[in-house]
Image (cartoon, rainbow, N blue to C red; front, side, top):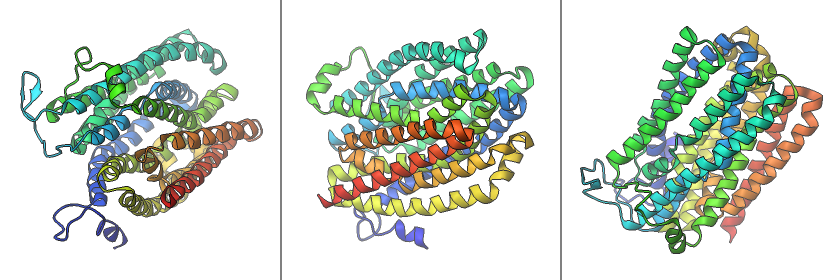
Length: 461
C-alpha cells in the first residue's frame, strides 16, 4: 500500500493517468535493471560458492586481491562517461525515446540522433579510450608495487597485470549512457545478464578443468569482454547513435560548445576514484598488512553485502536519468519531490536488507561458502549495516549530480575516503579484519550525513 502510493501522483503525470510520472518511470527503469541484475544476483551466489569452495580461504583471498586491484584501477581511471552522456544529452534537446528498433542504412538510423547527441556520445567514448590508456599505465605501476607486500609470485603478478588490462579495455560506460539516454533499460538489462551467465559458465569450466586462481580470473575476464560486446551491440541495434571516433567532432570542439563538460568529466572521475578507494581500500589494506586468508573472509562478506547493495546501485542508476530529465524540463522542485519519494522507498529497502543480514547472514555463508568461512559473519553484519545506510541515501548523490553539484559530490566522497583511511589506520592494527568492517561502516555513515545536509541546503536556495 505504501509503495503503491509512492508511485502515484508525482509531477509529470497527467490527470487521466496515461502518462507515467517520473517516479513511475523510475519504477519501470528499476524493473528492467532488476530483470538483468536479478538473474545476476542469483548466479553470483552460485559462482561465488564455486570459487570459495574450490580455492579455499587463502586462494580465494588471492583471487579477491587481484580482482579488487583491477576494480580500483578501473575506478581511478574512469570518467563515468555514462553520467556525462545522460546529463548533456538531455541538455541538447528532446530525446526521442520512442525509437524502439532503428533500421539502418549506410550505418545511420532512420531516426538519426541529432548532431549534438552524436557528438556527446562520441566524446564519451573517447574519454573511455583515454581512461583505458591511463588505466593500463596505472595497472603496471600498481601491480609492481603491490606484488611483494601482498605476496604474489611471478605467475600471479603476470596474471594480475593481464587481468587488469583486459578489464580496462572492455569499454562499456559510454554504451550504458547511450542506452539510458534513450530509456533503453530493457536492452541494458539484457546486456547486463551476459556477465553473470558468462561467469557462471566460466566458473564451472574452471572448477572442472582449471581449479586455480588463474582459471577463475580467466572466467571473470571473459565476462568483462562479452558484456562490453553485448552493450555495444544493443547500442548499434536499438539507438540512432553511431560511434565514429576518427570522423566525429573533435573533443576540443565539443568542449568549446559545452564549456562545463570537461569540468564535469574531471569531477566525476575524481568521484569514481574515491568510490573505488572506499570499496576496495579495506580489502587491499587487509591483504597488504595481514594475510590473503583474512582478505578472502572480508571479500566473501563484502560480496554478500554487495549482492544486497546492488539494489541501491540499480535504484541510483534508474533515478539519475529521470532527475536529469525533470530538472531540465520541469525544474528543481519537481526533482526534489522525486528525490524525497525515492528516498522513502529506499529506506524501506534498507530495513529489509538489515533484517536479512542479521537473521540469515550466517546461514547464507554456510550454504554459499561452507563452514570454513563462517568467521566472516561478524564482518557481514557490519557491512550489512553499511549497505542499509547506503540504501537510505541512494537518491541523494544523483540529485546533486543532476543539479550540477558534482563538485559537492566530490568533496563528500573525499571526506568519506579520508575518514575511511583514518579509521583503517587506527582500527586495522588493533582489531584486524573486524576493524576494517567498522571503518567501512563509519565512512558510510559520514557520507550519508553529508549528502543529506547538502540536498537540504540545495532546496532552501
